[in-house]
Length: 503
Ligand SMILES: Cc1cc2nc3c(=O)[nH]c(=O)nc-3n(C[C@H](O)[C@H](O)[C@H](O)COP(=O)(O)OP(=O)(O)OC[C@H]3O[C@@H](n4cnc5c(N)ncnc54)[C@H](O)[C@@H]3O)c2cc1C
Image 1: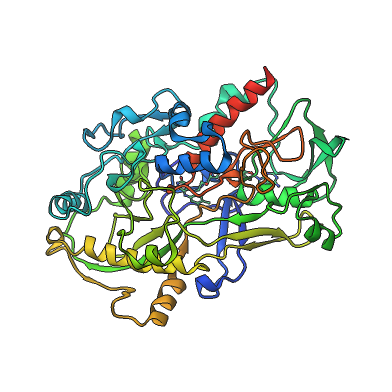
Image 2: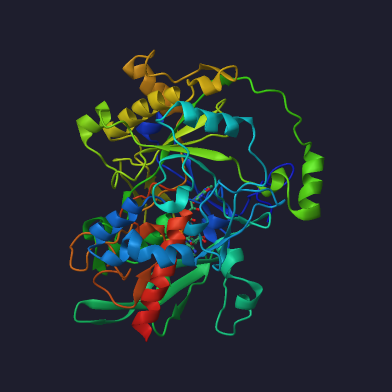
């Protein structure tokens, strides 16, 4: 699979669930697409391939919120390495000093690497900037548990090709296993109990139908069902199955199998403000598209072998910032950045809020499993989130105003909190804000006996037997990361829970 997209662009028709959000006041009234991968490998087959794990504090927070130390960074370390197969950048450039070899896995399934080219002018100026502005140091490796600073971008790319959950785990040998059957274009409508003992349903049957509707049939697992339908699909299937808020289910005439009010609640998403600077880089000789394509087809190098940026800035809000004073710190701890900014171009940059307080939800419209969903992203609904973006923009302005950028970046084109009124600033940010396609947390993990949450720390559906969930819906807290690596970490940990319980 071509990482950088084919010449003329990728045709994603049929490869996406093109969900739309509800109109969102935090997006200036816009409905936005909530894409998910409708393809083997799910969203990992269509994502931006950025590979970041988040901070050690993020996982320690998972351990705290789940009441189970097995989710801490230290306890997860073998699983953090287990999924990864780190490789050199294609083309053979020397990447020494751009990563820490001690913090990578080398024998896992998911390929990861640094970009094929660089450093380019922007990267060199960033290094110079780190010498001049102590606030923005270079960090050897974003994936060592302390992302703060500027680091080189790592991607789920191996040998110049996309590495997805499908290419990594569903290899030709695995597909030949006699005990594996893959049904494509098949839609899970519900999960069903095979029996109920006392008040505990044993949920091991799955009801499936063609994606276009029509005849349903059921399949029953002899041991357990593992549901991996993602942050939208998992709550949708549960709600269709009568697992959710009893009052809301009865309003839709769906018999309640398990009253778990948190199903579909707590959706957390990263949102980004769109920023712009005037930039005058030295003229370079860009590689023509046909030459780039020839490079990729010949030996999997060149622009088509890469994702989108070389370096990223990860930063915390200053301790004395008004947003933290007014609302407290939503981050998992001092190693978690509040903000991220990819550094490929300042002409059109994104400042991502990694630690929002805002929460949304996923609900079903009716008892028809093929009916649409109500996806309320609810971003920028908490005042901290816009206040943090405001402070973050000031931080980004400081970053690009150092002497290292002289003759290269001339002016900031906003949105500028220091020249706009409060109302104008909010409008400018929200009308151009992007969601970063990282929603998580609609079926959260919580301590074994806690009334809140949806799954226990071993990822079993609460109040039931026979059913586990292994996807981003169970994240108890959004990591300060692009979310695919945390899913791989969660999945490798989950696999051992399954193994241990079966033996
Ligand atoms: C456009 C985009 C760009 C992204 N960029 C990055 C990035 O650069 N780096 C990064 O780390 N993360 C990125 N992400 C996020 C990351 O890919 C996801 O967080 C991660 O893949 C989620 O994994 P998951 O297993 O929870 O769900 P998914 O990968 O979404 O998998 C869910 C699977 O369940 C299937 N499914 C759902 N409902 C049903 C149903 N009813 N019946 C049958 N099957 C069903 C889906 O088809 C899908 O195959 C991006 C996401 C998107 C959408």
